[in-house]
Length: 609
Image 1 (cartoon, one colour):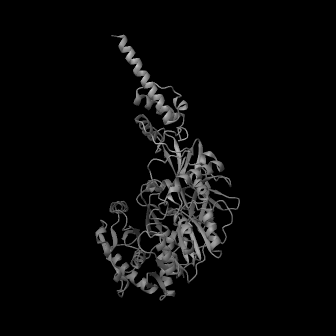
Image 2 (cartoon, rainbow, N blue to C red):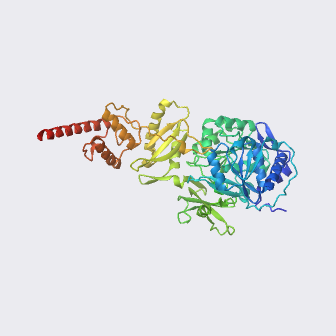
Image 3 (cartoon, helix red, strand yellow):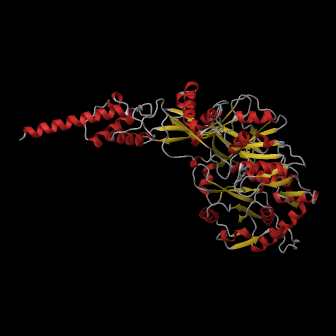
């Protein structure tokens, strides 16, 4: 008899559910359904083909399929065969898929029949189509081989903060720890889970395997990057009761489609710092709703900590809770010593959810995965360095402060960009916010804020952005005030539903000074405006705009002085920008000095004749 508390393989857990409820619907999408029995039969048929091809012992199997019942069958079949699935999104650029397949050294692939032009360069390729869920299953040609819970179950590529994709190898044990006996969610037999995120994103682990192991229905969202209206329609049509949203998507749906969450029993969100105002708003609208803020890196299998509540309260931050069952969390300093409660440190996570490591990258694995010093953990246990800043609160829960690599220095002060984003989100009229840094030619680092304001008339954007910045100047420390607040239609999200900061506008910053814009008219004024614009990274610049109001400072003034003297062939005093801080005044000074220089040259020429 199997020990209920011992780690187990995920496909075995699904198979046991198949035996309990064979005729219950396991998967649904737009009217198509698949029972647990049919899911298992189709998966066993494909698993037989995979075993015959040589899959086993954690072999990496690339998967190129859209979000369909065939995809779920394929993932289940790969686990049955003893392989580890590696999802390749058909919407990704082909070079990206090729790069990942090469890095993973994959020899096997399962490809949807409609993706014949996107076949990876591997040795063994199996094509599948809708018929796999309809035909009767043949007897297995290859018997199933016993697997260990530490056998790899999937490989998930993540660039993390480095921009270099790395394959995270996740074993069955880690998924078992997530879904076997969760203490952060109460799953009911009649629950309907929505599979919304990309399968290449580790939240899909929770979305797919929790309902299949627990005997619930797994509803599939349409393939592709669905818009808000399509997501809300799917929630309604499928009767979804358990929903996970990334932070960016959560903020958008609460802002624009709060009514679309009707019927959701348990709402989960995470992936970045959550806005307390948005959580309070959804909890006020649905007082019976259960809400979970789930935190966890890919390297610790979806969730490391969770904060589950039935009431949001009035806290200024949304905590990430405590380590879930089977996980540990420690806030450490640079020397790996525990920091006192209330102090900020880096969060390290451990337990059965820790991944095996990075595929084919022993050096990177050794750097981020280290021996767990906790004496209560079994020998060989490891913990993972998340790179995230956190602290223990007085209430005994963890507060997530964002990435350590998003902590910057502004005028000597250490600033956490998420703190500025939360401040912006608390302001009336701001629906979404993203803050990043930009460094000008003088090496000066500035905070640049982007805010989305919904249906506001674009003619009001500039005024709103300036007013918002003035309000922040009056309410928060100066180093937390963005140098510019740029109003945009929308804050873009990447395919994983997280804020895509690299897609934010990168052109020069709009002027953010109090006076009206007066366009340069004379040639010298226009040339000065061009030089200032390049130095300050601002446009347009008017003739009455003050150099220092635009963000200039002493170091930049000195550099600009050298450029002006070379451009106009004049000698200028070191304090010229303090004495003549506008384009109009400086242009007059330059013209006078050029004229004086010409007069002196003419006099000198006359004296030599």
